[in-house]
Structures are given as structure tokens and as C-alpha cells.
Length: 473
Image (cartoon, rainbow, N blue to C red):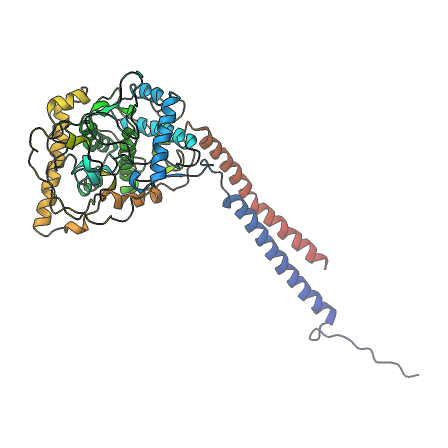
């Protein structure tokens, strides 16, 4: 009987089943490794893609009052009157009497108060308002009385006496005295009550400390507009009674926000000047000690949940381009005559801050006007600030004349506003806060970071499982 030959497998001809097993091992390793990476990526993404948010209701975007629709402007008036009826405005007026003016706390305290007012305005407006608007007042610095803000479609005409529509009959917190405006003689003339927007933008770029910026912004343009409008606005103990107070202070706060964004080191700059009260990030804000720290007010976008929108594209130039004069207007202007009180600029063309051919110095306010408004601030300090602006104006005019800079290339404040949201959108670490939502945010982030740190362990476990399983094949 013939026997079948025995076939042996040499090392050069491996058994076909062994080759299959090797390919299977390689395929399994690659498959499980890929699955491990995908799972680790998914877990990491889940931990990072939805960070806790201290602004659960979103970030309010404050807009120029003149960019609002007529319905939105009316909503501001209606909401203000409703808050007056509920005594909320009166309570804020009383609270404002405690605000430290002429100190390094001036801006942080007002930022906190503005947010309190804004929250109530938005609440009672039932969706008609989304944020507190601001008055782009530097665009109107040449002729504030002609501003469309002071119209029957705004906060009422800037006349001499009690407010008219839409705030006719409005009283202060005494409930007996009508809220009024009394601009000093000459305010209806065409002259520089405050520096042009280009000059303030340039000044903001030069301020190196919070203390310097705060002092100068409080003096100019803030204080000057209180005196210009006069009446209740010219009395620090009653000024929040006037609806324009909130638009005015919202713009003052915008200037601070702009300065914070001019350069990175300004964002959390609380450095004060000699003679000013120092402020630390953890210090509690006066009047709002249970609600905010100084750092909370600096991080206004991530903690106070608001930012600023630009006014928008430059409006069409005026049909007649008026030039600022450096002369005192004739005596008797602004004395309450019919020509002063009956003109309604509701349909006037918007002011164009770029429509200037030369920059003129501000007319110094009378000593008595300054002392009546802010008796705790020395006149020497006032005049120093005014001189600083005068020197800057002279410098800019000289540079324009010799061709060093072009007038058309000078930035206005509105050009700088676009950086506000960008430079304050950084993640918050939750430190030095008095806001419960921010503190809770930090706790949640720490919890997520802890979960994210476990992702490599999961990956390692999958890899070990792959090695064990493949070894059994």
C-alpha cells in the first residue's frame, strides 16, 4: 500500500492560519487604538465644549440711544416712568447720595448702579428693551441742545424749566419738586463744551493708570455735561431723577470700557495716582459690598454680563457744516425764551463727529458752576485737567498743520468701541468675586477639569484591554 508523503511546513512557508492570526492581531490593535482615541477625544470635548456660564441669560449689548427705534425709545420712557411709580427711581436717587464722587471708586460704584438700573428697566419693559442705552454725547459736544437725544422722541427738550414730553410732570424723590433742566447762558451757542471725540479717543490712549483715567474722565466730559444740562442734573444729590442721567453715565462707563480695551494691560488696571485711595481687586465696591468686588466690575462682560455696541456707520454729513467757534456766545442765549424752549430736534440730522476742520479748546466753566456741582473737588485739579486737554488739542492741531497726521485718519471713540467685546471675552477664573454665579462657575470648572484629567486613564485602560485580548488570539 502506497503511503502518502508527509508534507512539512518550513519557516519560509508559514502556515496559512498563522498569517491570518497575525493580520487579525494587527487589525484589532489598530481598531481598538482608534476607538480609544475617539473615546478620549469625545470625553475631552464633552468636558470642554459646554463650560459653565455665569451669564445664563446672555450678555446684554448696550447701544446708542439714537440707534434705537422710536418704539424702543418710547419703551425707555415708559419703563423709567413705571420705575418711578414703584419708587425704584427714588430709592436709587437716595442711594446715589452715598456714592463717592471725586475718588478712585467713582467709576466702579457707578458701573454697579448702572447694572442695577439696567436690570430693572429690562424687566419692566417686557422685552421691549434689551439693555440700557447710552448717549453718544461727544458727537454732540459742539451743540448739545441740538442733539436728537433732547427731543420729544428722546428724553425731552433741553429747555429751562420742568421737563416736557415724554416726561412731563416727573418729580424728584421729594414727590413735590418737578424735575427740571437749567443750562447756563450760552449753551445754545455753537462752541466746545467738551472735547471732540477724536481728542478724547487720543487721551484715552495716553492714560497709563486707572487713577489718571478715572480722574480725567470724571472731570471731562462727565462733570461738564452735568453742568451743561443744569437743573437736577447739576445737583449731585438729585441728578439720577433726570432720565438723561442714565444715558449720560452709561456713556461715561463706555469710556472706561474703551480704555480697558485700548491695550491689554488696561483690562484689569486698578493702579491709582498719588493722593488717591488705593483699590485692590478683592476690595468690595462701596454701597454694593455684598454684590461686587472691584475685580467683578473690571470683568464686566464675563461677570456683569454686558458689553457695548458701536454707534454704527458714520451718519450723513450735515447739510450745513457748522464750525466750532472759540468765542463766548452772546449774553442772553439759553435764558429760557421761546426760541430756546420750543425747538424740537427730533427730526434733525444726526451729528457727525468726523465733520470737523479744526479742534478748539473748551470754554472754561465758571468757578461758581464747578463749586456748585462738586464742592469737594479743588478748582486747581479742575484747571489742571482742562489744561491737559488744551495742550493735547494744541498738539493735534499742530500735527495736522505740519502734515504729521491727517485729520481724516484720527480715530473717534466709536472706532475704539469695537475692541470692547473682543478684549473682554477671555475666560474667567472666578477669583476675587462676590457674585455667587461666578463663584459657582469656578467650582463647576474645577469639577470638569477633574473629569477631563481622567480621560488618559480611560485610554490606558482600553489599550491594556487590547493587549490582553490580542494575546489570547
